Length: 593
Image (cartoon, rainbow, N blue to C red):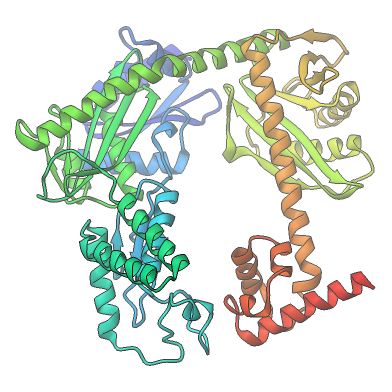
């Protein structure tokens, strides 16, 4: 860090709101923050004492930029947009792409029930949830589909399908259905999802008794199992008899350089879900909490109100978030905040030691690798290839930054040279670093190759030819008789032992497993595509969309081959389904002959 250069920039920072971006020695943005006063906030990083985590961030800062905004609200929005764009290593922990499943009831002439995660795509539909996980959503959907015969097909076919004959669809494709019937089912579905199942349970008990009296014991058992499923769906955690609206409750707690954020998703006095994040804290806790909330609601629907702890600066949040924000002083909401805060403290205490140990082991592993290599080895790239008798030869490149996989930098390659593993290594190394040179991309500190001296020499030959000898350090992974990495090898053949109880050993093992997994997955994907190409692509009436729909519906080519023409017709039109069925059977007959 050029301290004089940094100091001159700090002096000239304006006392205005905005976003600041910290950069490392490669010019990459590693942290994005926002401030009411850019001058005061950014200067705090370079003056006074900091905890371990902030010190680690500051040690990696070589430069910074800033953008002045008209208000703190604009600074907050800009911060989130920059985080999404650059995904900085010290911010990315709070970015979460997961979303909860909902039961979706479409608003169509003949409605459908399905599982959905994005509640913003179809604003006309009705959504019930959130549900705890995919398993709970599937179980709930199964119950509803057993109770109410909504339409199942995406596009209405020409005639009724199997679901109609099973009594799980009313058959609007052939029969005229009174819209009032669907409205009644929609009302019953709404009551069920709101917890009113008395009518359903009473009806199922009646049907179970009638089936038993008629000696239809198998049907009676089906009603019994369905009744049990309905009762299980109501097994939720009531925290208080309160029906004053839906609310999300979030609180945070910091200790020892870590931040715990806990959230309760409360619907009608019932905690449906609990959010929890435990991450290293590199910036201001309140700023990180606000950034988390903004990011969270970019992928999750709003509740009617958001309840936050005392001391939270809600001025900018209230302008950005489309929901009412409360900071309670007493009463029911205060009780929820206290519960949330207590959970954050407890979760941090429980998980802190394991998280701290994991960070410590990773940092120790990177230091050990750098010491063995005699140079900085913070950014590492590994390569592996996969093929069967030279067919579908592929290679994978995985990237680790400070011991953590940088998945956005992974690359996959279809190789043209399939003569040997050495030729494959030369090709992928050349293609990877010739392109980085051409695009002035970021080079790694080192390469780890799998295969001993032969592969090391292959990689070295290419690296030397590209003039990168002094830029990239090459080392090989040495394995024992059980194919486990137990040492590293230098380019001159020197074996450098690795203690099996060290953090470096476990890091190398994870790296080796990851690069191998990535190569194998890509190879299987290409093989799977090739298996279906020769048959489905030649069937009349089957284009890319229908081919994709078939494989999605049946899961694999083997299951598609085992399906009947009627089952295939549930996915694509009957005429095309018959062509597919005949083509598959013709192929089977040729194989038998």
